[in-house]
Length: 150
Image 1 (cartoon, rainbow, N blue to C red):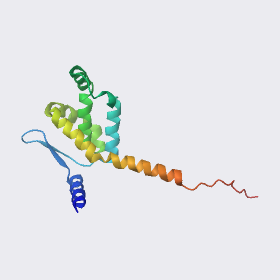
Image 2 (cartoon, rainbow, N blue to C red; image 1 turned 90 degrees about the vertical axis):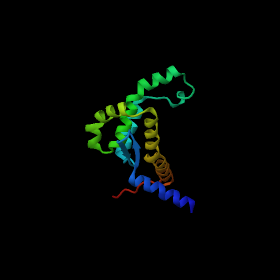
Image 3 (tube, one colour; image 1 turned 90 degrees about the horizontal axis):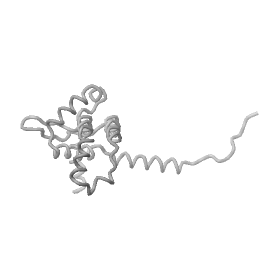
Image 4 (cartoon, helix red, strand yellow; image 1 turned 120 degrees about the vertical axis):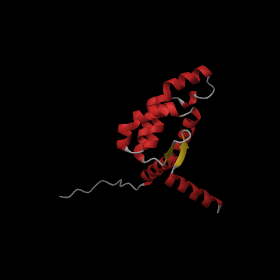
């Protein structure tokens, strides 16, 4: 019963989105990203070239260097996640990301990144890839030579 309630709550969040406040009057609503949006986000993330292993245990100086190198890219990812359509992403990402750079606090940006990861369903994607790989490996193969007609 409790699991069913959690599933319904998650589905409601995915349908209606999650509101992130940017100030007293402004807020952004993030919905579950479509595959095209996820591809755009993934492309931006890979461009950053961040080695996740090196993130833990760094100095304050290293944290500032990392933020300087990747802060704009993180704002671009947040903008892409919010815009959510190919045309909007192509036309408005740079404008919206610059706006977000000056409106979001680091905590709000972190919350948006966590939200995008949660809403993205990347786990579903990796599970799908595993399923397809399993199906391909277990698919029956015809090992007998083909008969040729005369």
